[in-house]
Image 1 (tube, rainbow, N blue to C red):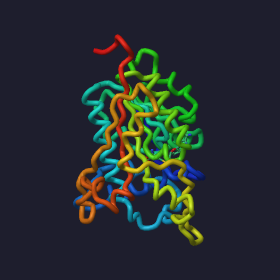
Image 2: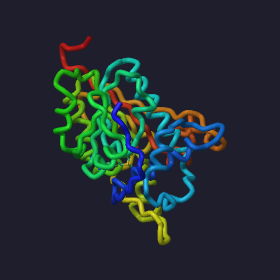
Image 3: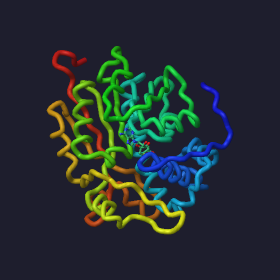
Length: 288
Ligand SMILES: C[S@@+](CC[C@H](N)C(=O)[O-])C[C@H]1O[C@@H](n2cnc3c(N)ncnc32)[C@H](O)[C@@H]1O
């Protein structure tokens, strides 16, 4: 494994790239919990300790458990893919400082991180590439040249593309166009993403979720939302989509004990994010 340096690193990001630090901070907050916790992520804890950034602007990490339940749900789906396609390739679009590779690594997975240049520079400083299994590419997810990095020898069915915490920052037509392009390029492959409910996106767009204060953090605007019950509509993005599933959360502590049923409870449902797993059809004549 590539050697990792241990000095503290100042991270100065703005706009959407800066949001990766909120995610990291919340993962680490849950992972630091003594006793019962929904996520083990020692690398996230180590990263927060190494990064020179005023994390206190994110407040008390009140959403940490909810965020960790989201992460567990995404990890479970990546593990299901790896169990079915050992040695498969995961392309993590907008990966930020996610440490999912280390949580799900089966010793064979090939992992390609695709993120904006400023984010990849931070990632490479803190989590250096370790080719050939773990590589990163500085490129927008919307610049489809990243697809060439997957390798022409990799079958579409051996590819899972993830977009965790990304599509809400893209216009709907770009998000759906990206899913359609993946369906075209990776027949038999899969796409995994999360979506925020419309009401939450509307509140964010109206500025109702901004924090005040000198060190307050103002989250960038989300652009696309989708309610839990709308998940089947994703199939309209491409005729090559053969399956769309909305994934269930695990049971959490306290109030979050209802997480597995949260998609059914009115009031909760309208404020709950969706995690959507999409499958693409095989190209004609290539099914196993
Ligand atoms: C909310 S963070 C999510 C980070 C990580 N996936 C996670 O769940 O912790 C959003 C990420 O999307 C990246 N991003 C924003 N626009 C992008 C684009 N057009 N292409 C690729 N990545 C992008 C940012 O740099 C950042 O890493």
